[in-house]
Image (cartoon, rainbow, N blue to C red; front, side, top):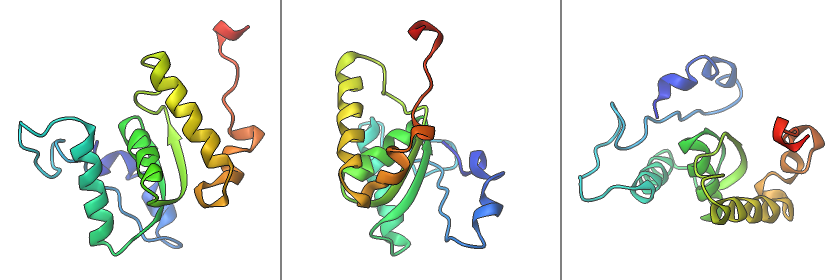
Length: 133
């Protein structure tokens, strides 16, 4: 949604990384979207344009909720080096979305380009929920 959500983390990254924490298109303070151009696609395109504007073909991406979904979608477009997605939007809305996310994560495990060490790490895997016990 907003760069402000990442403000507590950003200072720890700036010594070693160039950081872009955009306010997403269509969100307060972000680029505007025409009312006829709604949905995640135009937001994804906007983030990709911002990456291009920074001169970045690829980047290490971190996203939460919608940002997590966008990071994974950018991975599908070949725009990432590694991805860390938290509470990814759309991951569990229905079986089809869950299967799509699972396939994407499995595909990411097959090559180092998409952060296989992170995805394949046992500590990165979700713990069993109460309903799994």
